[in-house]
Length: 331
Length: 255
Ligand SMILES: Nc1ncnc2c1ncn2[C@@H]1O[C@H](COP(=O)(O)OP(=O)(O)OP(=O)(O)O)[C@@H](O)[C@H]1O
Ligand SMILES: [Mg+2]
Image (cartoon, chains in turn purple, cyan):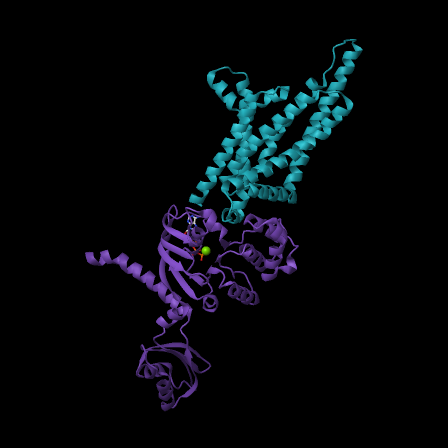
């Protein structure tokens, strides 16, 4: 449905997007992840024909964004980072305008407006001035505008920013309902967002593609090892933290022990295992055999956050390694 | 050009949802009304005088009131037009609503035409304010209708031209105050040029004079409909709107 090949977008000084290629199948929800300034918005703007690419191609529903922009635009619903709203308009008036602009006929417009007002739950404010709405409602009106013409492809730039948790869940449900018939790309900083609603993730950093995979694969890829949180109770300075740490490090299969906290006589450690080793039982035995009180032991999942940080950090150190190489060669 | 009409309607709605429309109309009505008052007062005084002195020279309402008054209207309009066009595109760029327009399945030309049409319609409303006074004139004296109509046509063409230039300037910035300021400056320059070149007969002055949007109004003001002037205005409008279109395109490249 969406096919991007070798896409590069250069601004006057910066290269915002650097040779990115990816494909999105029909009906998928894809999460677009990356730290600030990674080039998410820029990529989306190219896909929506707002900006032309410097080089490379982008194809939506079989139409090239540069050769057939009108055809592409007809099939895309776009929610920009700041919802494009006219403060002097009322909600329904605005939706009528947006809908007509996107080619909905005069006969259908009222029905469509009512539908999206319902779907995005903006019924309470339908006759209010947009300028007087709260941020969350503006976001929803922006979303309503994006789906009003029932587009094949939805491109949403941070659709849940500024929403309260309840609204986030509602939007998540809405997106789930929309997926299937629509192809959705959404960018976000909230990783749980991606875990919950996306099937695939595209991670970019500093304009470069870092990873593109399904959420499950991505978490598995980095979850070869196990992480365990342990809490040991201490009284009268016994056991002392370094002693516990040393003892834990000696457990077979342990790769790393991190002291997290020592408060009110409770020592908390995070222990990571070597690839493919199960260490929970052994850790528990060690603590108990040493005569300490084991007050908690639980597995810590490696979250998408960790993966995200690992991937983008790897990219960064990789880049700096490259930068320093010539210097090292000189020495 | 359904999209142009759609956008034109939206522009008109937002003009009248904000104080701009009312401010421009009120300002025009006020200044024009003042001009009307002075012109007719002088006219009455003058005709009384000539009657007392027993002169039988006929007084002409067209020559002595309508013509200077509508010439005056063209000058006022020159300075109100920046207020009409400044927000057209600059505001959309600032708030980001331009993203809605440029990612909707409509042509850039439709967007520009719609915006310009919206501005022209507001300008017509502004000119409409002068009709109240002119109608009084018709009720009270017997001016010729034809020169009045021609002068109004001239006002509309000159306005359309300056509005197109203003629209173009509005696409070049995000800041509507800057857009308004530059448009005002351009109008001021045109106005000054028409003064300076009027007393100058060198070749350059003639060229500048020809290109000056203001001088082409003179014939209309006299009640003379010259096809040359109409063609000049129409081609200037076309040219300015074409520039606007190019500017929108380059806006995408630079954005
Ligand atoms: N109009 C512009 N002119 C020049 N540089 C720009 C422009 N817009 C974006 N950039 C640059 O391009 C890079 C990518 O920006 P982009 O907005 O795509 O990032 P993003 O991933 O959307 O970030 P965020 O998470 O903060 O929204 C940044 O370095 C930014 O400074
Ligand atoms: Mg962004």
